[in-house]
Length: 192
Length: 192
Image 1: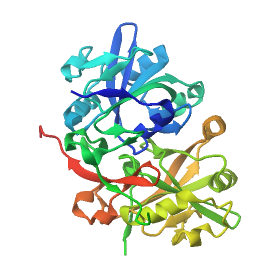
Image 2: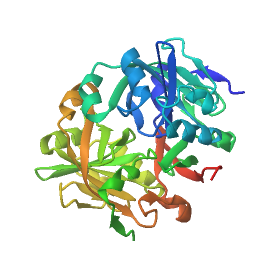
Image 3: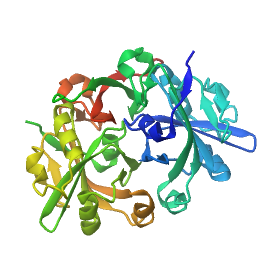
């Protein structure tokens, strides 16, 4: 079982710095959802902020707009099928989507949004005011990270260490059509 | 030598979909610059759009704001030192930064921005109007992709194929402090 450790907020941007595909969690008025998103990135270091594209047609977007909060989880190779599943159907069509897709989760203490068990990082976020200008034309949600955790087997001392953990704990990077690459080998400075 | 082939615009988002670190190129009034940026992602499919964070303190930001255009190149493992070099010093301090960092380039036909030789993908982009709302508070630049090319050894048929090419052509994913991961192994659907 993963041991999720708190990540200091000034290191939270590191969780997305290498460009992994993420799971976006949302909750409002007794409904909760999780979807996959490849278009997410850090936006600032301190306080940590993130940017993520969430289509208007999704239940996630509806819940995020209603609540003003969201979660971002980083799924791993062992969750590739789960990531495809939550990316492939809508919570609008299937109110029981989380059960259907095999998502086990807990709910964040600050936002009430789903934190997916088995993911290698979790962040709870609050939507930023500037989102009002870019959500309409570009489906772009800007948010501040208010809490973060990561699996200590792959993230410690403020950075990822995938090379010393099992392959199934590596992050996923979506290419197209349900095909991902796992993150690969470390490329260290030659000149050091 | 790389053979850069045109990428259809409806497939251009694929070039950034897996979250690589990029090189941002800029040019205005006889000055040109290239910097590294880990915070870049697709923003739309058709027409293709991208979002990238460019700090106010950089020469790149100054040139992009003056010209309204930029380029985004995807560097590869063989360019890790070049990527660190252009990420480590400012064109404001060193007017000869491109030569100092060993950057060989040509200039895009639509924007005049640098397209770095040896990179595995190139995009020319025009800044979008909504940038006016998010560049000030969040250093976020939104842009439409107007032309794209990729190295046919690693990108063909509208998607990346890193597994069939030399390791040095894989994309870079910045972790922290000049340490990258290369993109790794393909993770295909088990259920197919």
